[in-house]
Length: 139
Image (cartoon, helix red, strand yellow):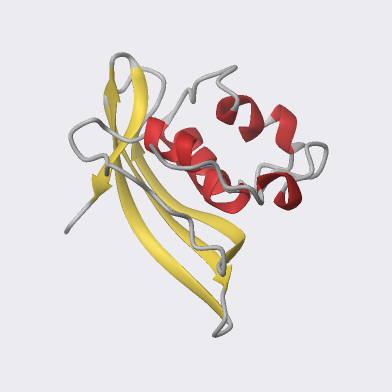
């Protein structure tokens, strides 16, 4: 299992705005999912919580929200990369009564080279009744 990022407490203010972009305090938004107090109700909510987990340094949450068939054995979060914003571009299915979903997003970051962005179409499925990340949708 991944080691907990020791910088987590330095990178997140529980009453500050959650990195996922919903505008709520972290503790009341993705923090609840990261602490295991709630589950993501939709594929988009899970994707947002996973983005926030990268931003605040929660590798255990990322691994736990990964489908068992595609989950890596370990995950290290790049300490030199700071996630600075998230845009949801499109969603397909992934609702309360769906079993699969796709979320396309653009994640902005800053690293040692400067600002950048990555765009991805992520596939999500339900495993044991809860949403999990499966893989990248390859067109």
